[in-house]
Image (cartoon, rainbow, N blue to C red):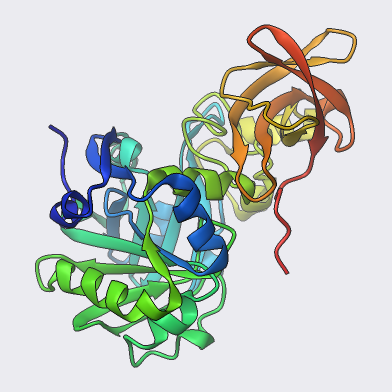
Length: 366
């Protein structure tokens, strides 16, 4: 038996199919991935993502510690602003991708992937020679995500915070569905409008927040959504998943994350190695692809070859785009071939199947 979030009983009641994910017993689907996926694309979906890790870094040198271990420039933040970043080893390989929230002048929240929580915490602590305190509050922090075109209306009905004022990668703190001190943020992982709600499980009633959201969202067609739909949605949006598209063997430059890697900000772990990759140019790049014929579904670890049969790379994420009804995926392809429009083959059950390299996202939102 894995760990359980405070919403586990609700998932059971709803008849969710439960799987082990990052050491947690998590719902992979309720009514079915297709239905949940389309609810998020057209109306709204509610995800329990409380398995994610939350570290609070505080103290006079909290920013200095984060600046040293993470690749983005934390000095660009202000209270109410969030930032996508990554932790890297000295060789430039990525330990994890994460979101950094600046709560106040001396306090930050780091949101990390569930499966990497212990590794990340150990790494940050081992580098903490600063006047900063790192607290792991993952087990007491609830995280719900409301995603979809109707999310703003649903969320607004449950808070006095003006959620229309919260811009992308910003957040506000306030009341929500009877819970207090809730961080209401807009970072998203589906390519849709939406909000993440962080709150303390010990000082609030998690079930009440869930039921209030479902009750308020009923007229908008809200559906509970599991990790299966979360994966198909993020793939359509061309968003990387740690363990698939980014690993400790990929650098931010190869992964197309040069934009979050601020080499000019000063010393940080992995900077020298990443600089070298940037100067020389990466030997491979993460790029999207779309299958040319229907009903051909690419999967992780399938090989990619040129039309003449040369091996070019390997699929890191693959599946069916529910909206396009076509196989899509992401892959590392050697740099000289990694151009959108290039025709390639994906080796599906050792047979070459035609595909075209494309620049994600696969679904263009207005």
